[in-house]
Length: 79
Image (tube, rainbow, N blue to C red; front, side, top):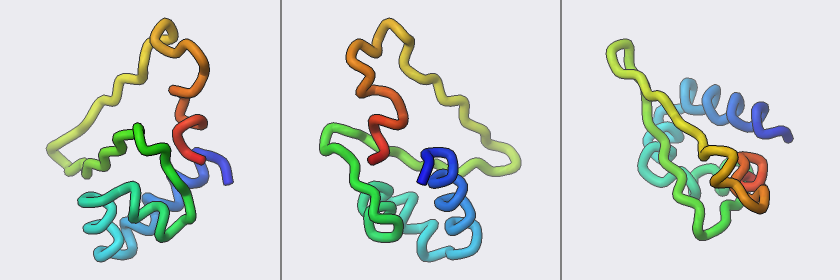
């Protein structure tokens, strides 16, 4: 499954399953592993936040100079 498809599946499940969403917000790595079988490296800090009609988030990726060996790309994080 591609990274983009996985993200879509996680979002769809969170919209339709309140218990999953609550778990995803409080313990994203274990929730995603349990539901989708995706493991994260221990050094990865994954945070899930929920936008509302009045609250938005802008995510800044690492600069290209900060990515030396390619392991910091999203595809390197989601296995």
